[in-house]
Length: 252
Image (cartoon, rainbow, N blue to C red; front, side, top):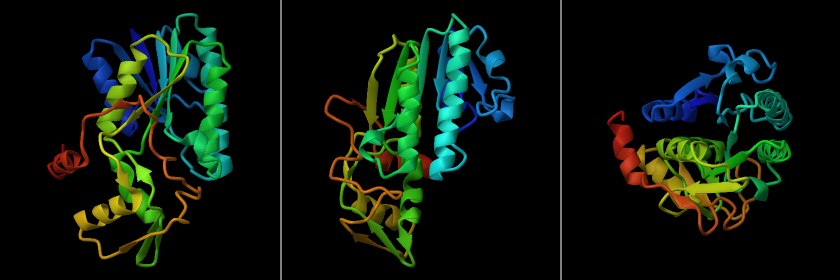
């Protein structure tokens, strides 16, 4: 089956293309690097021609509120229009974020929710994959919460996972039957966000200190105890944080 991977040159997309190719599918990496621009529509119809499935793992170049909303709404409308025009597209899959609907203070999360609503209302067979935060982005969480030499993180639960496992979960969903619903995936371990932040700094011998601050925001959004973790029944990935760190230290 031809499967078009929007954002196929990125972290998750490149891994997803490799998995699908290994399964014998014709995985097409579509991104501005390959001449496909979902914002302008350039190359979209050509890329989707003859596709049996489309999976969108692209991300906004900017996390600023209005820019993220413009990206996800415009690109999704362009993709849906092209997919609807090609009768062969029998499954439209998009990668989103666990807790997106629970973090309305975040303009980025509001944009992801808007994207999902467009997909659900499109009439196309679809599945939405909600993944927890990636291990690869934990450093970014710490850096975003830093003020001087102090990192302010809320002591709430978080259940991160490896990007490899995210790609594997998306691959499993896209080759299956449309769910017309959200499929949640998360890592095998839960942590307190502030404790995880300390672990990240300790692993790098970073002198910054972490303060467990109940009022600390997560990329601008207020977070509750379970805002960042999946519900019961979520698919659980296998890679634990210590294993991922070992692999990362060996360049794997």
